[in-house]
Length: 121
Image (cartoon, rainbow, N blue to C red; front, side):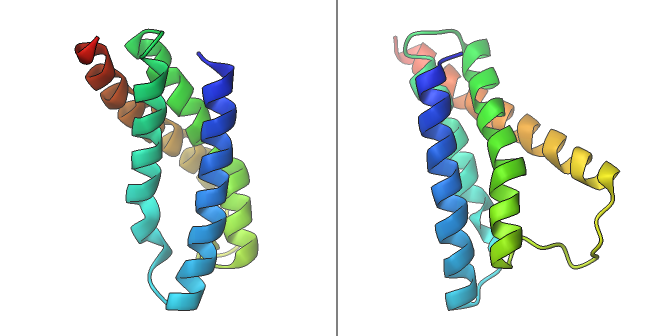
């Protein structure tokens, strides 16, 4: 696990969520289309982490970035508007489930990025 990559990845994902939320409102496209950008960030985090660490570390690092996105990033997009679920109020179990799911996606794409980088060593 690389703290510098976590901090840079977390800052990148929060900036992406903020800009993406604003763009979604301005250009009226579904906010959900931005998920591919999130996947790319997780992949990049895994790729960079695996330059000096294992694929497992790449997956864990990207999962932590997924935690940042599914908590602070979701709060930002919720506050701006497009991240607000249609069936409000949201239950605690749904929030926990979403956080877990996004972390697992982060781990998956981080492992893919880490595997690619590891194979290039």
